[in-house]
Image (cartoon, rainbow over all chains, first blue to last red; front, side, top):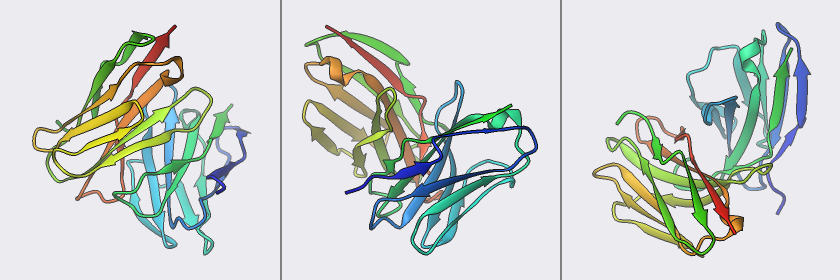
Length: 113
Length: 113
């Protein structure tokens, strides 16, 4: 069974640009989650998508957005990049939203210059 | 407790010794408690998902208990091995924030031969 895949592995942008991060869930998983780990901080919940809809959102500004496609893959878009957006972004997938474990990808390291 | 807290922040264990550490979480509106292991340069790996008060889960030498009334969970490692070196994360989900996992900062375990 292929795991959760994320692309790109690394992404370098400058302030004000936009970044797009991609995630393919494990086959059969309909829920996709996005997390941010900034330097020195723990994993922070960003977004949850299920069946193509945004179901829950963490305490992040609206310039963090995303979508889930019919094949359950997902994109995270970050507009008007700021220096503090530099972080590791992890995607996870699960069969269900509550009592099933989440399976994580290797992440995308986003660096803002 | 409003946030998920883990203690200690780090611990060093001799190979062969057993150890345990704590996760405290909000007890109101509790739905599920997740444990993950995160090794350096890898992605977080699911260990347990616990939902019932008094739950005990075991995976090899690692086990966990859950007390939802007082809002804490213990993770135990029996006969620690160097490959147990990792950061152990707990995360809680409540019924009023469905799908959102709130992570603790983790307990970093270093097992020395």
